[in-house]
Length: 234
Image 1 (tube, rainbow, N blue to C red):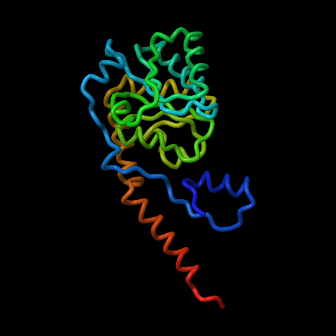
Image 2: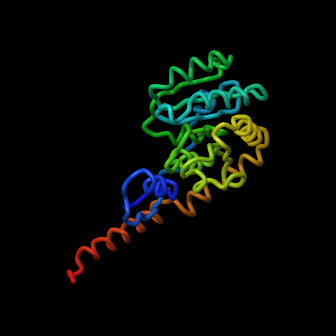
Image 3: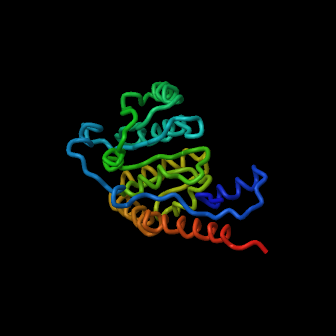
């Protein structure tokens, strides 16, 4: 058995009657594809007034906590002009938009629906929010990091294994929305800090999570298992 994080490995042992060894092999990206992609005019389309672009990408299930995304954004919006771009679709998206209306920020929210290729959208962002209730790994965060976008996320599941808080992104307790907003404002109001965190995130991806590093780990594991199966019975 394999798991994409130490967190998922622990949860598997806790929740299922599994006694065999679980090998942790993380998720990965094809780094020849997942990188910053400039798209002429996209940022201007998303934020024509030159506002900061805050982004969230998900399938909008309860675990993704769109309400927390909106609340963190609303706190950021109290301090600086900003636009929240919501990429994807799902059952909780209407609730998120209703909450944005209640918070008085609906005019600063753009929905762009599902996108086959999110690289250009991520590359147009200044900040990526991922305040999930849980994440077995955090692939969305990894995709943002590959595009040099600072990530502010919940300290849950496998995310602490991907993000070093204060170095390659920021992690906060799921209920610390004020802290998430403060970290978001820090990178949005300090261009050098934003670039430094973004580059550190990219370096983490290239140093640990590119397919040419991870796929061989799967291959070696499969060869090991097949070798055990082929061994003569005693």
